[in-house]
Amino acid sequence: GGKAVRKEAIAAPPKDAEAIKKLFPLTSGIPLVELEAGDAPSPKDPLKVGVVLSGGQAPGGHNVIAGIYDGIKAWNKDSSMYGFLDGPHGVFSGNFVVISDAIMDGFRNTG
Picture 1 (tube, one colour):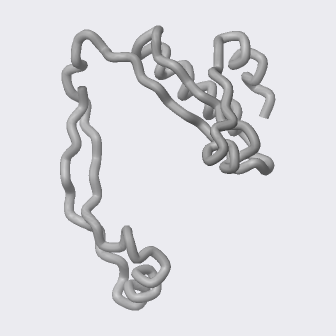
Picture 2 (cartoon, one colour; picture 1 turned 90 degrees about the horizontal axis):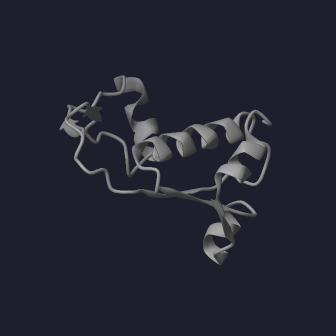
């Protein structure tokens, strides 16, 4: 598969550095990581991916999820996607559905 390449952190302008560090204390100043293409492992193991929206309006959210679905199925036809219901609460309560081709096709291009 691809490989992660560690890059140097991009410094914030001095006048904003402290404000940014206070807003993002866990991520401020850490190195940037970029993924580079590599040789795909063979065979490609199936993936299990969970998706959740915030529970509010998410314009284009269904198409983003459809793209992820198509990508994991292209990776391995046995990959599976789990859609959590009721926003983040569904993650904590275990309220999910396994997304099938039929379910996914019903949500494509619907917002």
